Length: 362
Image (cartoon, rainbow, N blue to C red; front, top):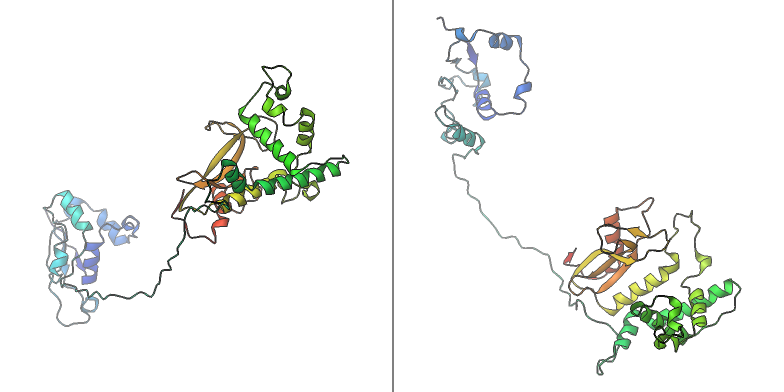
């Protein structure tokens, strides 16, 4: 059977490219000329196993123009120049190697023939860390610590109760004046009104008027003896926190659905942050306030224990649960600058811009 020999003029650079780039991602898309297509279309029986390679052309050699060509060796499956460093030859796969060894050798790094020595020198840094003596989570209540304060004193200081009562008195009288109804109240009367609502929160009766019922098994003397039912209803109808004349129209881009309770939210947020310094670990999460009445801000969250109500965003201490700041969710924004999660975190951490950086924020 005749053997067809093909002679190729291959340089050192071309041989190294064939050996080290045999797994190129673009090898399937390489262009083929007419000679290559004719060679691939020949009968495999007429093609020999060996490939005879001529000596490289001096101009194409890696060593530059030279009168003495470099010797090459002819191998059946792999073409390896005799001038290849031993470190490179050791990394080339052999025909007798198993497939696993071939893959490991193909992907192994080329080890340089000469050892490389590194000299490490210390570099001095001019960065100076500023140490801050900060009492994380310290209580800032203005109470006399020499005497054991009562729970009522701590409540008044932490919630800013006196300032809140003064705001309710001012806005309630203004609201009734705008309606053309004569109304006057005092701070003591509003304080009693708020205290009665706190008791009604845990002492529940079937009907609101049962607190003043004449039946001995329904009446609650602790409520009925403080204020009459008629006066209680008058104060409840006049209760107000914001001036209605300052409310923006609904089609205004800055319209706030929580406008009527916004002063209350700002008041509590300021008081809670003044009462205690920020802690290192804080968490931001949702909180539901139970409500089943009619309101556009009412939310339904199936996965929550309280499914119907107002959704609040709260920033609390991760260890003690102390509430630093909260905000009422009023609905999806039409043109938000940030996403929902990013916007909430940005809003509830604005007050921390002047404080030391938190370690973690969940």
